[in-house]
Amino acid sequence: MSLNYIAFKSLLTKEVSRFTRIWLQTLVPPAVTMSLYFVIFGNLIGSRIGQMSGFSYMEFIVPGLIMMSVITNSYSNVASSFFSSKFQHNVEELLVAPVPTWIIIAGYVGGGVIRGLLVGMIVTLLSLFFIDLNIFNLGVLVLSVLLTSTLFALGGLINAILAKSFDDISIIPNFVLTPLTYLGGVFYSLSLLPDFWQGVSKANPIVYMINTFRYGFLGVSDIPLIYSFSMIIGFVVVLYSVAHWMIARGIGLRS
Amino acid sequence: MKALVIKNLAKTYKGGVEALKGIDLEVEQGDFYALLGPNGAGKSTTIGIISSLVNKTAGSVEVFGHSLDNALEHAKQQIGLVPQEFNFNQFETVLQVVVNQAGYYGVPRKLALERAEQYLTQLELWDKRNDKSRELSGGMKRRLMIARALMHRPKLLILDEPTAGVDIELRRSMWEFLQQLNAQGVTIILTTHYLEEAELLCRNIGIINHGVIVQNTSMKSLLAKLNLETFVFDLAPNSPDCSLDGYQYRRLDDHTIEVDVERGSELNGIFSQLSAQQVSVFSMRNKANRLEELFISLVSKGVAK
Image 1: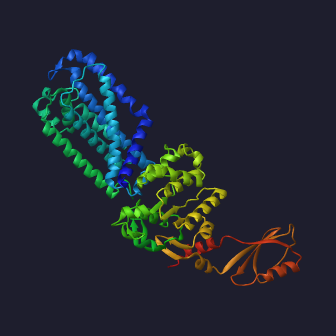
Image 2 (image 1 turned 30 degrees about the vertical axis):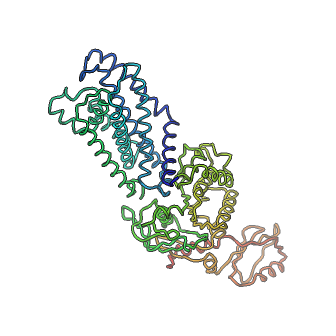
Image 3 (image 1 turned 120 degrees about the horizontal axis):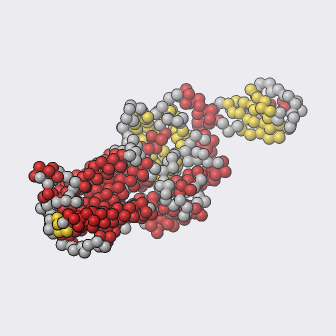
């Protein structure tokens, strides 16, 4: 076994055991919140809204809600885990060891992706109590959820690297991530918006992720798939490069 | 082979604080080296740079021939660090702390578990292996950091004030453990505020002050610079007042006196004079503050290397 593989496995195991150890804080809340969304927006209000893009409102919002929980959990897992390591100084265990920067990123991002996917699966299973989910394209579904959770785990990592207090790791999720997610087409089709706001919405990266994921379930998307995937992959490359540069330079980590 | 070669190492922090002003330092393989200096002298900055926790401003560092600039991962593999502050994950168990750290150095889990048992047993922590690390006492936490630093079998162990806040019994057992490690070939660099500790353990010593090495020599030659030695005489209880012509002395209580003696001069005169005054001596010891006196004089005078 190569040294890098052992280091990656150690870090990933540590990350996964961290969020599973505190499952009441990490896995249960999104399940409860999304169940409430399903009951209130899907069942009670959704039945009066009628169809959206040719599907029942519940069918339309379920992919968006799954993706919303994946995004939030991937992001917050890495943000809180990495910042706690900085705060307790145990990130120094990694910095003094011969662990390459890409392994540090892979370990933390891997932990965030696994939590995002686990929560996504829990929410998907819960949605089965409300609708019969059909999968239109499994490949698109898996690829979009993997890339999206990777992207937001990288975002959480950068946030934690730059954060100086616990407040700093809640500002982005509360004031940037949540509005972008709600305005990213979880609850409505972009085609309902006037042309101008459709254009503005296309500057929101979450629009591409939710639409791609929804395509995997329903086969409909407001944005062409190739365009969406290119955007997501582009964002992943940019955020990875930024995170790599920051850790290698020791920004926020070394004095 | 040199375990550590530092050349012209400088560090200026943001805000302009010049912590290191171009220091040079060499530590031989197998040495037990003390790095001393008052608070803020630059000890922890030096250790931080060697262990990659602080970015240097200028200069070079080589660990067993591996440069931090172009063979960083090889250099890191040689070093075990016991930092001054507790920096393990407080929510992990003792066993998780050491096994995870071994994993970061590429030690397979099975081997890591074997080593964990060895080091935790030697450091009397094996019974606590499943306890959360935050539940340990201060002394146990220090020992946990030593065990963690040894998991990848480093050739150079750096300890930043490892016995701070540790009771004397435990401190002595840690000294024994470190001496055993050194005897097995591990090069050790130690910073400490207990000068008795440095005097007892270390063969060579560097004194750093205001970011400059003011002394880098063997412990023996450093102590030889001290001209006066102080001896403590324990007398019979309620001994009569006595005087010692030709000696500087202090009566501490009714059965103790301290006498300053010039290095190389005989002690017989003290005994003769005390005996003539009907004062019985029960025991005598060298006052263990020699290095302290020298340290204070070097640091306060700012003696150049």
